[in-house]
Length: 240
Image 1 (cartoon, rainbow, N blue to C red):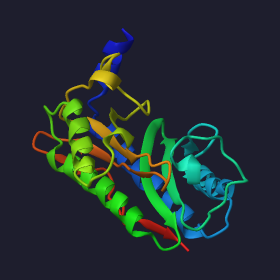
Image 2 (cartoon, one colour; image 1 turned 135 degrees about the vertical axis):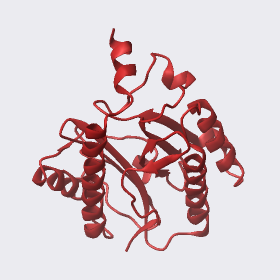
Image 3 (cartoon, rainbow, N blue to C red; image 1 turned 180 degrees about the horizontal axis):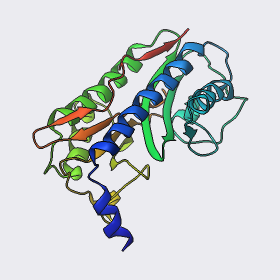
Image 4 (cartoon, rainbow, N blue to C red; image 1 turned 180 degrees about the vertical axis):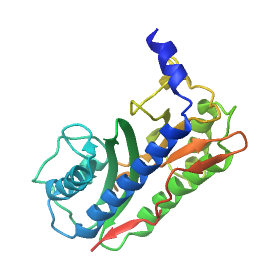
């Protein structure tokens, strides 16, 4: 019964889509508030609190203990516990994975930044991740299997000469849960997209040496393509 109910609610009603669109906009505004205060030497916890406060001030809630899945340095590759000892250090990559709820529905958005002028290698990795996400969105429509999306991301990033084994990619539906799947094995084996679903594709290159690079947005799946719930700039964020 649980999986049946999950399949039923994967396709969103117009009212649900309106709520989730407003939530996506709110989440983008909270991220912008974080970016505005980010600077060399600021503590990870201080940036996270800005995100939490913005959501709370707009009747929304952050997800989990971390508030936002912020990661500087080694924490950009792995979800380490939040720490006020980690600060923005020159040369590091910063993952900003913003997770929360508004009116009971989840919102999920990720961007990547670097501290100081990005290096040639960092720009290259970011371009690979961005190109992969754009390739996904250009072909995403009803009838596409998410396993094909996973393959496309790996091949696109691999085409930049980067290591495929460092690529992490997950396409998940979004709604009353942050990970909504139609079947119990959907995470491992994929599922077919349907008209009216709202999904995120997490494109993640987990580089333990140069830091990780991550992008994702929420899109509404249609019969002939997909549309962003709320457009957000995709330039690599630079914290000076």
